[in-house]
Each structure stands twice: as structure tokens, then as C-alpha cells.
Image 1: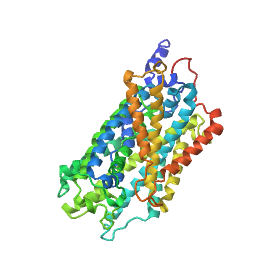
Image 2: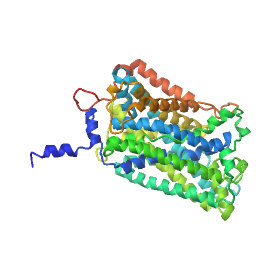
Image 3: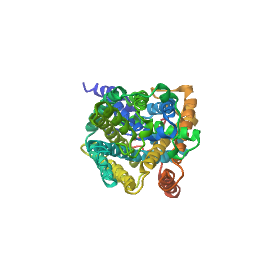
Image 4: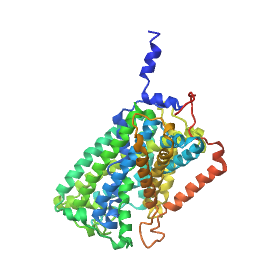
Length: 523
């Protein structure tokens, strides 16, 4: 028995843990997540409703239903290139730092530290802003639920003022941080509920909404109608189409969440890529069905944006739901129930993004890349989760939301910052993978071979395009009330980060720091 123990231990070592050790990291987090649990968290981070719902109204207003509907198909197509490129890298580097770690190793010893620095901070900015987008949209949905429950805008209902809206935003953020402080099993359990909540809830909404609506728009209206709203101030048709695609570009990312959890996933070198691609496939299909259900169920397109309508013109999907159920049943109960399903999706999405954000801050702190790293890299001794990193992310997210009290375009800015940071972080390792010499890459079970260069090129160009359009003004004429603050906010943040690199960090930051010794060789 004594002689067999070492052999038994070697056989039982998880393939993901073995690869982690080869890369120079010891196993510190619990590796107990199955493929389905990892997929649940990845799917919850992308979420079925949270991208489409808050931006559906503005995208419909820019260029009408046809651009909105077909925009999802076009963006889904290019998203597959990004997902496939990332799946290959994830298979080779199954680490919690994911994008940040990938960038360091793929860029080589000369450019690796700078590449990982850029990638880590872009991803950190994107994920923390992502918590803010979920908290804001969740508060917006809750605002509509309260309004409909108390009698609608026409019937003297209560429309939550800005101070209460901010309290809801902060409350959601704190709840997510508290839940993320508990053991990972709690998050995994909640996310198991989340995937069924969204699949079942999404199916119910997609099927029920068009059936309940007294009238439905024609197929020609949904698939071919193009209409620009004068209220946006945009007169260029191509520009209007570009802006109408934003809802799809904002919704179709977040699939890297599976990569953040690879140190906690069984067989991560295989299950990580499967979870990434499965998430994209599920969201592509369900997302398009959700858009079609909303668009076919519109009763009066011109009434959706009326500030005197039942939802105060503030939340187009809520008005579509109200019109459908009130038209048939003469009450808003059905609309409130479906809005609660949508709100649950925001809740689960924010919880998952908080999980991912904390893992990235933990990984960067582990390598000394965050001020006061010794605090943020601490793992809770009992629950084995990076609880200090969780609360740092929550605190920054709350600060991002404070302008809600004074500024009307907070959501536009937070959404843009989130998308550019999050998706921009994808570009660094994908570009490095595209230009590196193939002999320096150790392939995992998922390998693209000769197809990797064209796939990475399409993915990289699409990411660059996506980041560019989120910097554009979304309304004209440009004033303090309509100005997209994302370029200014990102410019200041990235400027300080690059200044820190030039003046100090480049002297000591070397990228991912191994915490076990490995033999010399290709990793």
C-alpha cells in the first residue's frame, strides 16, 4: 500500500491543477466546481436580460426594429471569433488571472510585463464598472416595479426619486459583496438557481409575451422597418445603425467568467473552453428570441417613449410588458411578475460579476500589481475566498454610482467604461497569440492549429471596432446633459495607470509571479 500511494496521488491529480503547477502556481483555492457549475456562473455573468433590457429602448429609437434585430445576428457572428480565440488560450492557461496571465505569457519575456499590466487594469476597470451596470439596471427595473405596483405614472404611482434610486444601487452592491464573502459553494448554488431562473424565465417571457399581446407587429415591421427618431438629433443613417448595434455589443460579452474560475474548476483545461463556447451559444439563441418577443409585442411604437405614459417613458421594456398585459387583462399584475423575473436576472448577473471582479483583483494583487497588494490578496482562512478583494470592488462600484444624484447620463458612461475595459482586455492576449511564434505555444486539449491567425485577426479587429463605437456621442446636439463621459473617465484612469507604469511600475512589475518552482522549459 505504501509503495502505491505516490502513483495513486499522481493519477488523482486534476488535469487543471497539474497544468497550474507546470505554470508555476500552487493550488490555493478549492477545486470543486463541475462543468455545469462553471457554465452556470459564466452564463449568469453574460445573462439573458441584463444587456438587452436597459438598452433596448435607445437602440430601437436610433434606427427602428430592423437594425436592432439584425444587429444581434451580426454581432453574435463576430463574437464567436472572439470566443473561439479565447477558448484556445484558456485551454492552455487554466489560471484564475486568466486574461492577465495569458497576456504575460503570450507576449513573451520582453513585452509580457507591459502586456499583462495593460490587460489586468483594463479588465479590472471593466469588471468593476460591470458591477455598476447591473446595480443601475437592477435599480431601474425595481423603480418600474414599484411604479406599477403603486398605480402607474398615470394613476398616481410612486416613481422613486434619485436619492432612493442611489440607495437601491448601493444596497444591491452591498448584498452582492456579502454573498461573495461566504463560501464558494453558496455562490455556486445561487448560480445554479440563476441558470434555471434565466432559462425557464426567459422561455416563459419569450413565449408568453407575444401570446398575451392583443396585437402583434408584422414581420415586415420587425425585420425590415427602418426609422430614425428626431429626438436623438442624429441625422446620419449609417451612424444611427452603428448606435443601434450597441445593445448587442454590450450584451454579448462576459463569457470569460469561466476562465476566472479555472483554478476552482475540475478539468479546467477542457471544461473552461466548453463553458466559454456554450455560454455564447446559449445567449446568442435566447437573446435573439427575447429581442423578437419584445419587438413583435409592441402595441404603439410612438407611445413607448412618451413621458406621460404608464412607466413615465423611462423604461421601454416595462411599457411593452404593461401594454400587453393591461390590454388583455386590464391590470398590471402579469407585467410586474415578468419584470420581477428580469430583475432577478440583474441580481444574479451582478452577483456573478462581483465574483469575477474579485478574482481578477486577487490575481493582480498576488503579483503585486495593486496598491496595498498585501491586503487585497488575502484569502479568507475559513471560506477560502478573496473577501478583501470583494469589498474593494464593492467600494469602488459605489463611488462610481454617486453621480446618479446630479448627472442624467450615468448609465451611458458606466456602460461604455464597462464594455471598453472588459472587451478591451480581451484584445491584448488575442493579439499576442496572433503574432507569437507557434513553437513557443504549448497547446491544450482545445487547439486551433493553422486557423488561429485568421480567427485571432477577425476577433482583434472586431474588439477594436467595439471599443471605438462606445466612445461616440449617443445624442445630439452635445451638451452637458447628453455628453458621453466615458472618454474622459477612461482617459483619466488609463492615463494615471500608464503614468504609474512609466514612472515606477515598469521597474518592478514582472507580471504573474510564480509561487512554486518549475523546471526550465516551455510553458
